[in-house]
Image 1 (cartoon, rainbow, N blue to C red):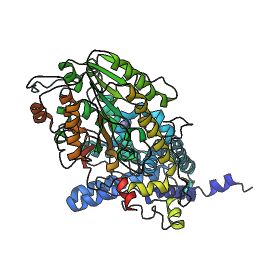
Image 2 (tube, rainbow, N blue to C red; image 1 turned 90 degrees about the vertical axis):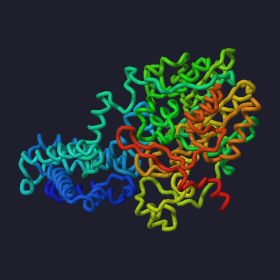
Image 3 (cartoon, rainbow, N blue to C red; image 1 turned 90 degrees about the horizontal axis):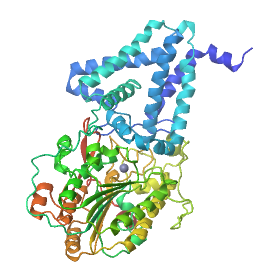
Image 4 (cartoon, protein in one colour; image 1 turned 60 degrees about the horizontal axis):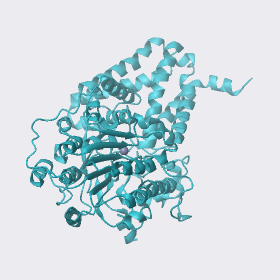
Length: 608
Ligand SMILES: [Zn+2]
Protein backbone atom coordinates (compact mmCIF):
# COMPACT_ATOMS: atom_id res chain seq x y z
CA UNK A 1 0.00 0.00 0.00
CA UNK A 2 1.37 3.39 -0.99
CA UNK A 3 0.53 5.71 1.83
CA UNK A 4 2.34 9.03 2.41
CA UNK A 5 4.58 7.49 5.10
CA UNK A 6 5.81 4.92 2.58
CA UNK A 7 6.32 7.60 -0.04
CA UNK A 8 8.35 9.60 2.47
CA UNK A 9 10.50 6.59 3.35
CA UNK A 10 11.08 5.62 -0.28
CA UNK A 11 12.13 9.08 -1.26
CA UNK A 12 13.96 10.02 1.92
CA UNK A 13 17.16 11.02 0.12
CA UNK A 14 15.28 13.47 -2.09
CA UNK A 15 13.31 14.72 0.93
CA UNK A 16 16.56 15.32 2.78
CA UNK A 17 18.15 17.20 -0.12
CA UNK A 18 15.07 19.38 -0.58
CA UNK A 19 14.96 20.08 3.15
CA UNK A 20 18.61 21.10 3.13
CA UNK A 21 18.01 23.46 0.21
CA UNK A 22 14.94 24.91 1.95
CA UNK A 23 16.87 25.38 5.17
CA UNK A 24 19.44 27.52 3.38
CA UNK A 25 16.88 29.37 1.23
CA UNK A 26 16.10 32.16 3.77
CA UNK A 27 19.70 33.32 3.38
CA UNK A 28 18.74 34.41 -0.14
CA UNK A 29 15.64 36.25 0.98
CA UNK A 30 13.05 33.57 0.30
CA UNK A 31 9.79 33.11 2.27
CA UNK A 32 9.12 35.81 4.82
CA UNK A 33 12.80 36.53 5.31
CA UNK A 34 14.89 39.29 3.82
CA UNK A 35 18.39 38.47 2.67
CA UNK A 36 20.87 39.39 5.40
CA UNK A 37 21.92 43.02 4.99
CA UNK A 38 25.38 43.30 3.53
CA UNK A 39 26.92 46.32 5.08
CA UNK A 40 29.93 47.53 6.96
CA UNK A 41 30.57 45.44 10.01
CA UNK A 42 28.32 42.64 8.91
CA UNK A 43 29.59 39.21 9.76
CA UNK A 44 28.68 37.00 6.84
CA UNK A 45 30.75 34.11 5.58
CA UNK A 46 31.07 35.49 2.04
CA UNK A 47 32.10 38.99 3.16
CA UNK A 48 34.68 37.55 5.53
CA UNK A 49 35.97 35.16 2.88
CA UNK A 50 36.38 37.81 0.19
CA UNK A 51 38.05 40.10 2.74
CA UNK A 52 40.65 37.44 3.56
CA UNK A 53 41.16 36.63 -0.10
CA UNK A 54 42.41 40.15 -0.77
CA UNK A 55 44.29 40.52 2.48
CA UNK A 56 46.09 37.30 3.28
CA UNK A 57 46.12 34.13 1.14
CA UNK A 58 47.27 31.66 3.84
CA UNK A 59 44.56 32.90 6.19
CA UNK A 60 42.04 32.65 3.34
CA UNK A 61 43.05 29.01 2.80
CA UNK A 62 42.63 28.13 6.49
CA UNK A 63 39.28 29.94 6.63
CA UNK A 64 38.02 28.27 3.43
CA UNK A 65 39.01 24.82 4.75
CA UNK A 66 37.29 25.36 8.10
CA UNK A 67 34.13 26.61 6.38
CA UNK A 68 34.02 23.75 3.87
CA UNK A 69 34.59 21.24 6.65
CA UNK A 70 31.83 22.81 8.73
CA UNK A 71 29.40 22.86 5.82
CA UNK A 72 30.19 19.22 4.99
CA UNK A 73 29.92 18.32 8.67
CA UNK A 74 26.37 19.66 8.81
CA UNK A 75 25.20 18.13 5.52
CA UNK A 76 26.70 14.71 6.19
CA UNK A 77 25.15 14.33 9.64
CA UNK A 78 21.68 13.87 8.16
CA UNK A 79 23.01 10.80 6.29
CA UNK A 80 24.56 9.07 9.32
CA UNK A 81 23.04 5.58 9.72
CA UNK A 82 23.45 5.26 13.47
CA UNK A 83 20.55 7.14 15.07
CA UNK A 84 22.27 7.53 18.47
CA UNK A 85 24.89 9.60 16.65
CA UNK A 86 22.66 11.30 14.07
CA UNK A 87 19.77 12.42 16.28
CA UNK A 88 21.62 14.27 19.09
CA UNK A 89 23.95 16.01 16.62
CA UNK A 90 21.08 16.97 14.33
CA UNK A 91 19.04 18.25 17.25
CA UNK A 92 21.83 20.54 18.54
CA UNK A 93 22.52 21.86 15.05
CA UNK A 94 18.84 22.49 14.29
CA UNK A 95 18.53 24.51 17.51
CA UNK A 96 21.42 26.61 16.17
CA UNK A 97 19.56 26.97 12.86
CA UNK A 98 16.34 28.03 14.53
CA UNK A 99 18.20 30.67 16.54
CA UNK A 100 19.99 31.96 13.45
CA UNK A 101 16.81 32.17 11.35
CA UNK A 102 15.07 33.97 14.20
CA UNK A 103 17.86 36.56 14.28
CA UNK A 104 17.53 36.96 10.53
CA UNK A 105 13.76 37.32 10.75
CA UNK A 106 13.69 39.83 13.60
CA UNK A 107 16.98 41.64 13.13
CA UNK A 108 17.74 41.25 9.42
CA UNK A 109 21.29 40.15 10.25
CA UNK A 110 23.15 37.05 11.32
CA UNK A 111 24.09 36.45 14.93
CA UNK A 112 27.36 37.48 16.50
CA UNK A 113 28.94 37.66 19.94
CA UNK A 114 27.79 41.23 20.56
CA UNK A 115 24.22 40.19 19.94
CA UNK A 116 24.45 37.25 22.34
CA UNK A 117 26.06 39.46 24.96
CA UNK A 118 23.22 41.95 24.68
CA UNK A 119 20.61 39.18 24.86
CA UNK A 120 22.28 38.05 28.07
CA UNK A 121 22.21 41.57 29.52
CA UNK A 122 18.58 42.06 28.54
CA UNK A 123 17.47 38.73 29.98
CA UNK A 124 15.37 40.56 32.56
CA UNK A 125 13.13 41.72 29.74
CA UNK A 126 13.03 38.18 28.35
CA UNK A 127 9.42 37.13 28.75
CA UNK A 128 8.21 40.60 27.78
CA UNK A 129 10.17 40.74 24.55
CA UNK A 130 9.65 37.08 23.65
CA UNK A 131 5.92 37.69 23.99
CA UNK A 132 6.16 40.48 21.43
CA UNK A 133 8.04 38.31 18.97
CA UNK A 134 5.85 35.23 19.50
CA UNK A 135 4.55 35.09 15.89
CA UNK A 136 8.10 35.23 14.51
CA UNK A 137 9.33 32.60 16.96
CA UNK A 138 6.44 30.28 16.11
CA UNK A 139 6.79 30.54 12.32
CA UNK A 140 10.59 30.19 12.34
CA UNK A 141 10.59 27.24 14.73
CA UNK A 142 7.79 25.55 12.78
CA UNK A 143 9.85 25.99 9.61
CA UNK A 144 12.89 24.32 11.20
CA UNK A 145 10.83 21.56 12.85
CA UNK A 146 9.12 20.57 9.58
CA UNK A 147 12.42 20.43 7.71
CA UNK A 148 13.97 18.73 10.74
CA UNK A 149 11.61 15.76 10.37
CA UNK A 150 13.19 14.81 7.06
CA UNK A 151 16.69 15.68 8.20
CA UNK A 152 16.42 13.57 11.36
CA UNK A 153 14.75 10.56 9.67
CA UNK A 154 16.88 7.46 8.98
CA UNK A 155 18.67 7.81 5.66
CA UNK A 156 18.26 5.34 2.81
CA UNK A 157 20.77 2.50 3.14
CA UNK A 158 22.35 3.27 -0.25
CA UNK A 159 23.00 6.91 0.63
CA UNK A 160 24.23 6.64 4.19
CA UNK A 161 27.49 6.84 6.07
CA UNK A 162 28.71 5.09 9.25
CA UNK A 163 28.58 6.65 12.72
CA UNK A 164 32.24 7.63 12.66
CA UNK A 165 31.25 10.59 10.41
CA UNK A 166 29.71 12.12 13.52
CA UNK A 167 33.24 13.23 14.34
CA UNK A 168 33.09 15.66 11.40
CA UNK A 169 30.60 18.16 12.89
CA UNK A 170 32.24 17.80 16.32
CA UNK A 171 35.64 18.57 14.80
CA UNK A 172 34.18 21.49 12.84
CA UNK A 173 32.60 22.92 15.98
CA UNK A 174 35.91 22.72 17.84
CA UNK A 175 37.82 24.32 14.95
CA UNK A 176 35.29 27.13 14.59
CA UNK A 177 35.39 27.91 18.32
CA UNK A 178 39.19 27.69 18.17
CA UNK A 179 39.48 30.18 15.30
CA UNK A 180 37.00 32.55 16.97
CA UNK A 181 38.90 32.52 20.28
CA UNK A 182 42.32 32.69 18.55
CA UNK A 183 41.31 35.77 16.54
CA UNK A 184 39.75 37.29 19.69
CA UNK A 185 36.39 37.47 17.94
CA UNK A 186 37.66 39.23 14.82
CA UNK A 187 36.51 36.20 12.82
CA UNK A 188 33.16 34.88 13.95
CA UNK A 189 31.23 34.22 10.74
CA UNK A 190 31.05 30.52 9.87
CA UNK A 191 28.54 28.29 8.12
CA UNK A 192 25.32 27.97 10.11
CA UNK A 193 24.97 26.64 12.76
CA UNK A 194 28.63 26.47 13.80
CA UNK A 195 29.23 30.21 14.21
CA UNK A 196 25.92 30.55 16.06
CA UNK A 197 26.68 27.77 18.52
CA UNK A 198 30.30 28.72 19.14
CA UNK A 199 29.53 32.42 19.64
CA UNK A 200 26.72 31.59 22.05
CA UNK A 201 28.99 29.21 23.97
CA UNK A 202 31.86 31.72 24.17
CA UNK A 203 29.61 34.53 25.42
CA UNK A 204 27.90 32.23 27.91
CA UNK A 205 31.27 31.00 29.23
CA UNK A 206 32.62 34.54 29.63
CA UNK A 207 29.48 35.90 31.27
CA UNK A 208 29.11 33.02 33.71
CA UNK A 209 32.76 33.37 34.75
CA UNK A 210 31.79 36.86 35.90
CA UNK A 211 33.85 38.67 33.28
CA UNK A 212 30.94 40.35 31.60
CA UNK A 213 32.50 43.62 30.68
CA UNK A 214 30.75 45.02 33.69
CA UNK A 215 31.58 45.28 37.31
CA UNK A 216 30.91 41.98 38.96
CA UNK A 217 27.72 41.48 40.87
CA UNK A 218 29.63 41.07 44.13
CA UNK A 219 30.27 44.78 44.20
CA UNK A 220 33.65 44.96 42.52
CA UNK A 221 32.54 48.09 40.68
CA UNK A 222 32.51 51.76 41.65
CA UNK A 223 36.18 52.13 42.39
CA UNK A 224 36.46 55.87 42.49
CA UNK A 225 39.35 57.15 40.49
CA UNK A 226 41.57 59.10 42.87
CA UNK A 227 42.54 61.48 40.08
CA UNK A 228 39.11 63.08 40.12
CA UNK A 229 39.67 66.13 42.23
CA UNK A 230 36.88 68.58 42.55
CA UNK A 231 37.94 72.20 42.23
CA UNK A 232 36.11 75.28 43.45
CA UNK A 233 33.25 75.52 45.89
CA UNK A 234 29.95 73.63 45.70
CA UNK A 235 26.96 75.92 45.85
CA UNK A 236 23.70 74.05 45.09
CA UNK A 237 21.19 75.96 42.97
CA UNK A 238 18.18 73.67 43.40
CA UNK A 239 16.53 72.01 46.36
CA UNK A 240 15.49 69.09 44.13
CA UNK A 241 17.21 67.82 41.01
CA UNK A 242 15.10 65.25 39.17
CA UNK A 243 16.61 63.23 36.34
CA UNK A 244 14.00 61.24 34.44
CA UNK A 245 15.31 58.46 32.23
CA UNK A 246 12.60 57.02 30.02
CA UNK A 247 12.72 53.74 28.10
CA UNK A 248 12.70 53.42 24.27
CA UNK A 249 11.14 56.84 23.63
CA UNK A 250 12.22 58.14 20.24
CA UNK A 251 12.78 61.91 20.09
CA UNK A 252 11.06 62.70 16.81
CA UNK A 253 7.84 60.96 17.93
CA UNK A 254 7.04 63.76 20.38
CA UNK A 255 4.88 66.68 19.23
CA UNK A 256 7.59 68.90 20.74
CA UNK A 257 9.99 67.87 17.99
CA UNK A 258 7.64 66.99 15.19
CA UNK A 259 4.65 69.11 14.25
CA UNK A 260 2.88 66.19 12.58
CA UNK A 261 2.84 64.11 15.79
CA UNK A 262 -0.19 64.29 18.07
CA UNK A 263 1.48 62.36 20.88
CA UNK A 264 2.38 65.09 23.42
CA UNK A 265 0.00 68.07 23.23
CA UNK A 266 0.28 68.73 26.98
CA UNK A 267 4.07 69.04 26.87
CA UNK A 268 3.89 71.26 23.83
CA UNK A 269 1.74 73.72 25.76
CA UNK A 270 3.80 73.55 28.96
CA UNK A 271 5.45 76.75 30.13
CA UNK A 272 8.88 76.67 31.82
CA UNK A 273 9.94 73.87 29.46
CA UNK A 274 13.24 74.28 27.63
CA UNK A 275 13.37 71.92 24.68
CA UNK A 276 16.72 70.85 23.20
CA UNK A 277 15.23 69.03 20.21
CA UNK A 278 16.06 65.50 19.13
CA UNK A 279 19.18 64.45 21.02
CA UNK A 280 21.43 61.37 20.76
CA UNK A 281 21.79 58.77 23.50
CA UNK A 282 25.25 57.50 24.45
CA UNK A 283 24.42 54.05 23.11
CA UNK A 284 21.57 52.20 21.37
CA UNK A 285 21.01 49.71 24.19
CA UNK A 286 19.97 50.23 27.83
CA UNK A 287 22.76 48.06 29.22
CA UNK A 288 25.38 50.41 27.71
CA UNK A 289 23.58 53.72 27.53
CA UNK A 290 22.56 53.85 31.20
CA UNK A 291 26.03 53.14 32.71
CA UNK A 292 27.58 55.69 30.29
CA UNK A 293 25.08 58.16 31.68
CA UNK A 294 25.44 57.39 35.40
CA UNK A 295 29.25 57.41 35.27
CA UNK A 296 29.44 60.60 33.23
CA UNK A 297 31.53 59.00 30.49
CA UNK A 298 32.47 61.28 27.59
CA UNK A 299 32.14 60.57 23.90
CA UNK A 300 35.91 60.88 23.51
CA UNK A 301 36.39 58.09 26.11
CA UNK A 302 34.42 55.59 24.08
CA UNK A 303 34.49 52.84 23.15
CA UNK A 304 38.07 52.06 24.24
CA UNK A 305 38.17 53.60 27.70
CA UNK A 306 34.95 51.98 28.90
CA UNK A 307 36.64 50.15 31.79
CA UNK A 308 38.30 53.36 32.93
CA UNK A 309 34.94 55.07 32.63
CA UNK A 310 33.51 52.66 35.19
CA UNK A 311 36.03 53.93 37.75
CA UNK A 312 34.71 57.50 37.52
CA UNK A 313 32.43 58.76 40.27
CA UNK A 314 28.72 58.33 39.54
CA UNK A 315 26.16 61.11 39.78
CA UNK A 316 25.15 59.61 43.15
CA UNK A 317 28.57 60.52 44.59
CA UNK A 318 28.44 64.06 43.21
CA UNK A 319 24.93 64.47 44.62
CA UNK A 320 26.08 63.35 48.09
CA UNK A 321 29.06 65.67 48.03
CA UNK A 322 26.77 68.57 47.20
CA UNK A 323 24.57 67.71 50.20
CA UNK A 324 21.72 65.95 48.40
CA UNK A 325 19.97 62.83 49.56
CA UNK A 326 19.99 60.26 46.72
CA UNK A 327 16.73 58.65 45.64
CA UNK A 328 16.26 55.99 42.96
CA UNK A 329 12.78 55.36 41.60
CA UNK A 330 12.99 52.30 39.38
CA UNK A 331 10.00 50.76 37.62
CA UNK A 332 11.88 48.00 35.76
CA UNK A 333 13.71 46.16 38.50
CA UNK A 334 13.03 44.75 41.90
CA UNK A 335 15.42 45.56 44.79
CA UNK A 336 17.59 42.49 44.13
CA UNK A 337 18.04 43.07 40.43
CA UNK A 338 21.33 44.29 38.99
CA UNK A 339 20.39 45.27 35.47
CA UNK A 340 22.16 47.93 33.43
CA UNK A 341 25.43 47.49 35.27
CA UNK A 342 24.09 48.57 38.64
CA UNK A 343 26.39 46.82 41.12
CA UNK A 344 25.87 46.18 44.81
CA UNK A 345 28.54 48.79 45.55
CA UNK A 346 26.70 51.38 43.47
CA UNK A 347 23.45 50.52 45.24
CA UNK A 348 25.02 51.40 48.59
CA UNK A 349 25.35 54.98 47.27
CA UNK A 350 21.56 55.30 47.09
CA UNK A 351 19.82 56.49 50.26
CA UNK A 352 16.29 55.63 49.25
CA UNK A 353 15.20 52.95 46.80
CA UNK A 354 11.65 52.99 45.49
CA UNK A 355 10.66 50.01 43.38
CA UNK A 356 7.29 48.84 42.31
CA UNK A 357 7.35 46.20 39.67
CA UNK A 358 4.22 44.53 41.02
CA UNK A 359 1.81 46.93 39.30
CA UNK A 360 -0.37 44.93 37.00
CA UNK A 361 -0.99 45.76 34.18
CA UNK A 362 2.48 47.19 33.75
CA UNK A 363 1.32 50.45 32.12
CA UNK A 364 0.13 51.54 35.57
CA UNK A 365 3.72 51.70 36.80
CA UNK A 366 4.42 55.15 35.36
CA UNK A 367 1.32 56.41 37.15
CA UNK A 368 2.88 55.02 40.34
CA UNK A 369 6.09 56.96 39.53
CA UNK A 370 4.14 60.22 39.66
CA UNK A 371 2.77 59.35 43.09
CA UNK A 372 6.19 58.30 44.49
CA UNK A 373 7.98 61.27 42.97
CA UNK A 374 5.49 63.76 44.40
CA UNK A 375 5.93 62.17 47.85
CA UNK A 376 9.71 62.66 47.65
CA UNK A 377 9.33 66.22 46.36
CA UNK A 378 7.19 67.10 49.41
CA UNK A 379 10.19 66.59 51.75
CA UNK A 380 12.10 69.70 52.75
CA UNK A 381 15.45 67.91 52.50
CA UNK A 382 17.49 68.57 49.31
CA UNK A 383 17.38 65.49 47.08
CA UNK A 384 18.73 64.18 43.80
CA UNK A 385 16.15 61.84 42.32
CA UNK A 386 16.91 59.49 39.44
CA UNK A 387 13.75 58.08 37.89
CA UNK A 388 13.82 55.06 35.58
CA UNK A 389 10.35 54.92 34.03
CA UNK A 390 8.68 51.90 32.50
CA UNK A 391 8.30 53.81 29.24
CA UNK A 392 7.44 52.19 25.93
CA UNK A 393 9.74 49.20 25.51
CA UNK A 394 8.69 46.79 22.74
CA UNK A 395 6.03 45.27 22.55
CA UNK A 396 4.09 48.54 22.44
CA UNK A 397 0.50 47.32 22.49
CA UNK A 398 0.53 46.63 26.25
CA UNK A 399 2.18 49.94 27.21
CA UNK A 400 -1.09 51.89 27.34
CA UNK A 401 -4.63 51.08 28.50
CA UNK A 402 -6.80 49.40 25.85
CA UNK A 403 -9.47 52.12 26.19
CA UNK A 404 -6.98 54.97 25.77
CA UNK A 405 -7.61 56.75 22.45
CA UNK A 406 -6.06 60.22 22.67
CA UNK A 407 -6.17 60.92 18.94
CA UNK A 408 -7.90 59.56 15.89
CA UNK A 409 -5.93 57.32 13.60
CA UNK A 410 -6.28 58.16 9.92
CA UNK A 411 -7.49 55.26 7.83
CA UNK A 412 -4.93 54.36 5.23
CA UNK A 413 -6.65 52.39 2.52
CA UNK A 414 -3.93 53.16 0.03
CA UNK A 415 -1.25 51.22 1.81
CA UNK A 416 0.18 48.03 0.41
CA UNK A 417 0.18 46.22 3.72
CA UNK A 418 2.39 43.19 3.71
CA UNK A 419 0.96 40.35 5.73
CA UNK A 420 3.70 38.78 7.84
CA UNK A 421 3.21 35.43 6.11
CA UNK A 422 3.51 36.77 2.58
CA UNK A 423 7.07 36.26 1.38
CA UNK A 424 8.85 39.54 0.64
CA UNK A 425 9.73 38.26 -2.84
CA UNK A 426 6.05 37.76 -3.71
CA UNK A 427 5.04 41.05 -2.13
CA UNK A 428 7.48 43.01 -4.26
CA UNK A 429 6.14 41.28 -7.40
CA UNK A 430 2.58 42.23 -6.49
CA UNK A 431 3.48 45.78 -5.47
CA UNK A 432 6.51 46.79 -7.49
CA UNK A 433 6.02 50.42 -6.50
CA UNK A 434 5.86 49.70 -2.79
CA UNK A 435 8.82 50.86 -0.78
CA UNK A 436 9.56 47.24 0.08
CA UNK A 437 10.86 46.77 -3.41
CA UNK A 438 14.59 47.18 -3.53
CA UNK A 439 14.70 47.05 0.19
CA UNK A 440 18.46 47.18 0.50
CA UNK A 441 18.63 50.81 -0.57
CA UNK A 442 18.33 52.85 2.59
CA UNK A 443 15.28 55.01 2.67
CA UNK A 444 13.84 57.07 5.47
CA UNK A 445 12.01 55.33 8.24
CA UNK A 446 8.76 57.13 8.05
CA UNK A 447 7.60 56.23 4.56
CA UNK A 448 8.43 52.57 4.92
CA UNK A 449 7.07 51.98 8.35
CA UNK A 450 3.75 53.56 7.46
CA UNK A 451 3.47 51.14 4.60
CA UNK A 452 4.66 47.99 6.22
CA UNK A 453 3.81 47.98 9.84
CA UNK A 454 1.41 50.80 10.45
CA UNK A 455 -0.29 49.01 13.32
CA UNK A 456 2.70 48.82 15.59
CA UNK A 457 3.65 52.42 14.83
CA UNK A 458 0.15 53.46 15.93
CA UNK A 459 0.64 51.42 19.11
CA UNK A 460 3.98 53.14 19.63
CA UNK A 461 2.41 56.59 19.29
CA UNK A 462 -0.36 55.68 21.73
CA UNK A 463 2.20 54.33 24.19
CA UNK A 464 4.13 57.62 24.03
CA UNK A 465 0.96 59.66 24.51
CA UNK A 466 0.17 57.59 27.62
CA UNK A 467 3.61 57.11 29.08
CA UNK A 468 5.07 60.57 28.34
CA UNK A 469 2.29 63.15 27.93
CA UNK A 470 -0.14 61.71 30.51
CA UNK A 471 2.77 61.26 32.92
CA UNK A 472 3.66 64.94 32.83
CA UNK A 473 0.00 65.99 32.84
CA UNK A 474 -0.34 64.26 36.23
CA UNK A 475 3.06 65.32 37.56
CA UNK A 476 3.73 68.94 36.65
CA UNK A 477 0.79 70.82 38.22
CA UNK A 478 1.90 69.55 41.66
CA UNK A 479 5.62 70.40 41.35
CA UNK A 480 7.14 73.57 42.82
CA UNK A 481 9.33 74.54 39.90
CA UNK A 482 10.81 77.52 41.74
CA UNK A 483 13.19 75.18 43.57
CA UNK A 484 13.20 72.15 41.27
CA UNK A 485 14.97 71.18 38.07
CA UNK A 486 13.58 68.32 35.97
CA UNK A 487 15.61 66.95 33.09
CA UNK A 488 13.95 64.39 30.85
CA UNK A 489 15.40 62.06 28.22
CA UNK A 490 15.25 58.42 27.12
CA UNK A 491 17.90 55.68 27.30
CA UNK A 492 17.85 55.22 23.51
CA UNK A 493 15.59 55.69 20.49
CA UNK A 494 13.80 53.14 18.37
CA UNK A 495 14.02 51.67 14.91
CA UNK A 496 10.50 51.09 13.63
CA UNK A 497 11.39 49.42 10.35
CA UNK A 498 10.27 45.83 9.84
CA UNK A 499 12.96 43.15 10.00
CA UNK A 500 15.08 45.29 12.25
CA UNK A 501 15.66 44.99 15.94
CA UNK A 502 13.93 47.94 17.60
CA UNK A 503 17.23 48.84 19.30
CA UNK A 504 20.51 47.26 20.49
CA UNK A 505 21.58 46.43 16.91
CA UNK A 506 25.18 45.32 16.77
CA UNK A 507 25.45 45.72 12.99
CA UNK A 508 23.70 48.17 10.65
CA UNK A 509 22.57 50.28 13.59
CA UNK A 510 20.30 53.04 12.33
CA UNK A 511 20.72 56.51 13.90
CA UNK A 512 17.03 56.34 14.89
CA UNK A 513 18.06 53.83 17.58
CA UNK A 514 19.76 56.78 19.29
CA UNK A 515 17.21 59.59 18.66
CA UNK A 516 15.92 60.65 22.07
CA UNK A 517 13.88 63.54 23.44
CA UNK A 518 15.71 65.98 25.71
CA UNK A 519 14.17 68.83 27.68
CA UNK A 520 14.46 70.59 31.01
CA UNK A 521 11.71 72.09 33.18
CA UNK A 522 12.29 74.74 35.85
CA UNK A 523 11.19 78.24 36.75
CA UNK A 524 14.45 79.32 38.42
CA UNK A 525 15.03 82.41 36.22
CA UNK A 526 18.80 82.60 35.87
CA UNK A 527 19.36 78.87 35.31
CA UNK A 528 16.42 78.69 32.93
CA UNK A 529 17.72 81.61 30.85
CA UNK A 530 21.12 79.96 30.48
CA UNK A 531 19.44 76.72 29.38
CA UNK A 532 17.32 78.66 26.87
CA UNK A 533 20.46 80.25 25.46
CA UNK A 534 22.05 76.80 25.03
CA UNK A 535 18.89 75.46 23.39
CA UNK A 536 18.74 78.43 21.02
CA UNK A 537 22.33 77.84 19.88
CA UNK A 538 22.48 74.06 19.78
CA UNK A 539 18.88 72.96 19.16
CA UNK A 540 18.82 69.43 17.73
CA UNK A 541 22.57 69.03 18.19
CA UNK A 542 22.84 67.78 21.78
CA UNK A 543 23.50 64.33 23.20
CA UNK A 544 23.44 62.56 26.58
CA UNK A 545 27.06 63.60 26.99
CA UNK A 546 25.99 67.19 27.73
CA UNK A 547 23.45 66.15 30.38
CA UNK A 548 25.84 64.90 33.08
CA UNK A 549 27.74 68.22 33.27
CA UNK A 550 24.36 70.03 33.38
CA UNK A 551 23.39 67.98 36.45
CA UNK A 552 26.69 68.93 38.09
CA UNK A 553 26.00 72.63 37.40
CA UNK A 554 22.53 72.28 38.93
CA UNK A 555 24.10 70.67 42.02
CA UNK A 556 26.26 73.77 42.27
CA UNK A 557 29.68 72.60 41.06
CA UNK A 558 32.13 75.16 39.70
CA UNK A 559 31.29 75.83 36.00
CA UNK A 560 34.93 76.12 34.92
CA UNK A 561 35.87 72.84 36.55
CA UNK A 562 32.77 71.07 35.22
CA UNK A 563 33.59 72.12 31.67
CA UNK A 564 37.25 71.10 31.93
CA UNK A 565 36.39 67.71 33.41
CA UNK A 566 33.14 66.80 31.67
CA UNK A 567 32.92 68.94 28.54
CA UNK A 568 30.13 71.27 27.41
CA UNK A 569 26.75 71.31 29.17
CA UNK A 570 23.30 72.07 27.80
CA UNK A 571 24.15 75.74 28.36
CA UNK A 572 26.99 75.62 25.84
CA UNK A 573 27.27 74.77 22.19
CA UNK A 574 27.22 70.98 21.81
CA UNK A 575 30.26 69.08 20.54
CA UNK A 576 30.17 68.44 16.79
CA UNK A 577 30.09 64.91 15.23
CA UNK A 578 27.72 63.18 17.60
CA UNK A 579 28.34 59.45 17.94
CA UNK A 580 26.75 56.63 19.89
CA UNK A 581 28.15 53.29 20.97
CA UNK A 582 26.95 49.90 19.74
CA UNK A 583 28.01 46.35 20.65
CA UNK A 584 29.41 44.90 23.82
CA UNK A 585 32.10 47.02 25.55
CA UNK A 586 34.51 44.10 25.81
CA UNK A 587 33.85 42.39 22.50
CA UNK A 588 33.64 44.54 19.37
CA UNK A 589 32.20 47.92 20.35
CA UNK A 590 31.95 50.71 17.77
CA UNK A 591 31.00 54.38 17.69
CA UNK A 592 28.39 55.25 15.05
CA UNK A 593 28.08 58.78 13.65
CA UNK A 594 24.52 59.93 14.25
CA UNK A 595 24.19 62.93 11.98
CA UNK A 596 25.25 61.68 8.58
CA UNK A 597 21.79 60.52 7.51
CA UNK A 598 19.65 62.53 9.85
CA UNK A 599 16.29 63.36 8.32
CA UNK A 600 13.75 64.38 10.95
CA UNK A 601 10.30 63.06 10.08
CA UNK A 602 8.88 66.57 10.45
CA UNK A 603 10.92 67.99 7.57
CA UNK A 604 9.80 65.10 5.38
CA UNK A 605 6.14 65.61 5.96
CA UNK A 606 6.51 69.33 5.44
CA UNK A 607 8.20 68.72 2.12
CA UNK A 608 5.35 66.51 0.93
ZN1 LIG B 1 16.25 50.55 26.91
